[in-house]
Amino acid sequence: MNVKVNDNVLVITGKYAGKQGKVIACSPKSGRVTVEGVNIHKKSKKARKGNEVSQIVEIEAPLDVSNVMVVCPSCAKAVRVKHNLVDGKKHRVCPKCGAGLDKAYSGKAAAKASKAEAAPKRVRKRAKKEEGEAKTEPETGDKAE
Image (cartoon, rainbow, N blue to C red; front, side):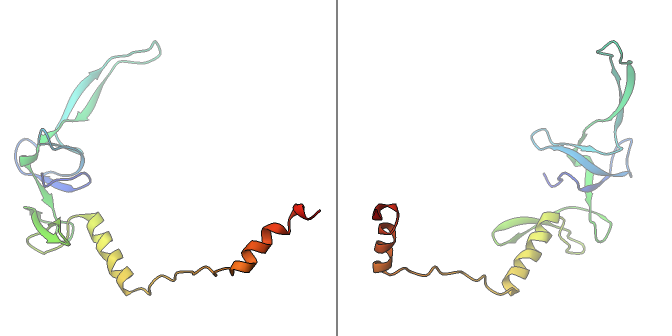
């Protein structure tokens, strides 16, 4: 499944075709995606306690993942997701402009680049005690008298 949570997607078929929204939830096993403000259904909520009021609630129902396309954040076009291998891992990429679609990936790549340019971390070495000093210290305690 090429769609992940917090992706901006465009609905391409159905009653809500042409609407854009943010992905709230994904279920890869069933191949369904819940999009914010799309596929709204009404559900009646029953009062469970004495002071509650019954009401009709509007909820977003899941769509099939084949009915949505990911919108590239840099070129703002609906695209099919392309996968590139970087350091042995697959990363989602826009085929039109080449921008990365994974927000975490772009952050990690920038962090790795800055670490490579930064000076190496200094390691503090412990001073070794001489054998004579280590043996004399425990004897000078309360046992002297």
